[in-house]
Length: 422
Image (cartoon, rainbow, N blue to C red):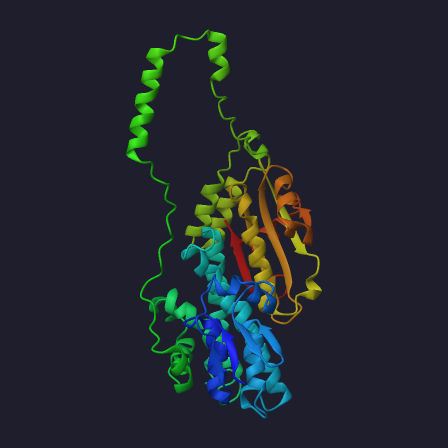
């Protein structure tokens, strides 16, 4: 009995299983007449996959959903299959790269892709964070591929199939040549794999996108002209026919004016001599002599009455054992701090070259306390210990300088990464 795959024919998630089938010789047929948004909403389909997602594989032993799980199943149908590794360590490394591809490449490509194609709300800071995280992942992959033809060993494995499919959507929809040229080993790897016969049989001829799709514009629904003209004419006619109403009665019919949006409490603070945007501009534009220009400029601008400085340290640094997970954790925190961009500036340092990695930061906030709305709405704040900077202590003041400057080593250790919120 052939295995039946419910999948969109040209989508990467279905490609994974179909390419594995080409390598293993397992017969996998695409479900006939499958229509996304229709077939997968039927009661029959929902019995097989309760959340109605695709792909879905129907086997003699029952259904399987989730694209990576399906690809693993098909790969393991063939005994001693080199796709899944010939040793325990090879198998572990294959699983490692499958997870890396899903969490670091595919997830960030999808976060970039969906708003551009109208299936999610477009938020510039969120897109910036996704692209930054994707570049970091491609950089790590590029380093590995500089001395390796394939991800594990000397032959194509399941890891190569899944990671190449993860990259497919990026190369064909978002990542132009100018973007991918920063990662030449990733380019070489991708084009080598998609031109392998078993890949090409499923994917066809793959072409790189020449441009990034524009952000879809939100169009207001147009009013028919006839409606507008009638709206103008009818009140005039009614005005001629109806006698004037008493002032008291007329007043009752006047629509209540919309109430002004309540101001942020920070906007009600006494004016400050420090203009935060001026400092952010100085920080961004200073490329040389950072101490003499930016740091000096910061203290010249700093208003201790209108602003306060805070050190933070992650409470659970002993759990930061995987570098890219730690970096993503910090990136997510900064993304969620977007609500405070008008009132804050921050530096977050990821410290150390070996796990566990330490996460420490410096924040400048409007006012003398951490803004309550930030504490309430950004759950990450509770994951850090916060200490107000004592500017009468020269050691603390110098620590502020070092954190703004990304001085290395910091507190005796190298920096894995330094991020700025501005």
